[in-house]
Figure: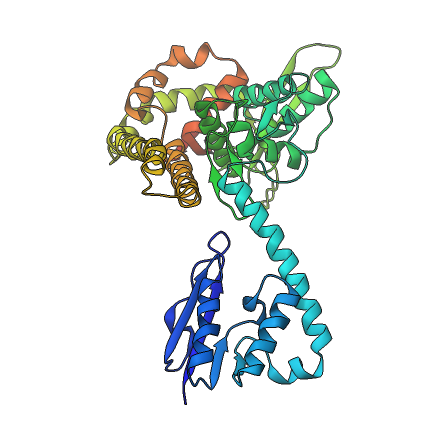
Length: 426
């Protein structure tokens, strides 16, 4: 009894199957990648050899269309070869052949669509669908829409300046009457298209495919701000006060909110930090906002240099140099591909597959590079440890820097005095 096996896979969509998928000893294996030359060879061999069984995983591997599959089934039946389909139940095939053929036809149609989309990915063409706001669909890439791209650019610049997603959404609505939801704004901030890259449904990213609206440095800063804001309580990222979302009562462990009080018939206002949900009776008293702000600045100037000096920090510059070197070496590979095609070492399709893989690897390296700290922490700590630095900042600017360094500010009343303890992020 002679048993053979046949497998077909499309390199654009799936890897070749492993030899052990058959689960039993096979006399001979035929495998096609993209074409069906081995299937033709299999049928020729069956005409001259005594073969009892042919194993396949799915019927649709026998052809690209239902008529092709039926034709090959007829050939195998004429040769007296019993076909065993491992991925399908034999009784279902016989009981409902029409349903099976309809399913095969749907699968083949879906497969042809996915193959066409895969070919577009290899060519770095935009995915199907409407272009993101700020772009238009060109012949083979996105082009900047001059009427809407300034709106997107202004949105990014506002977020970089204030670090507030909801604040930037309100800014667009007020200045341009462009109303978007916070979730849409977050998708804008994380969309690779605005960074000059293409992202596909399979999760892979190809870099530098069209003109970006924001630079790599701005994109890296946006990612850092989004990660930082995830640590804060909801809606505090857009608060106008620098201590919002950071202060906690050391006695009741309740987060504190900023309350504003105005005197009767006076324009002057007073700010206080009060516990949001204090379980104690009587409840913990509030703190003067300006007093806590001053104490926080003093504590930062005293504690930050020592905290940074005690850190065991990796050689960021060395890591950056290594990643940049890896990117340069992969760029060199891309530059060599046309020469390999001209010399006949690679055909056009193989070179396109190789270029696609290298470009996705470059995108991954650029993502790692963007996650590294953009500045030297020790040098920055020396600058922000000066009292004059903080006093020259506005509240929104102080909010930005506080959240770069501080995870939490604990407030404890000791008689008439107030003790401030700062928990740094690092």
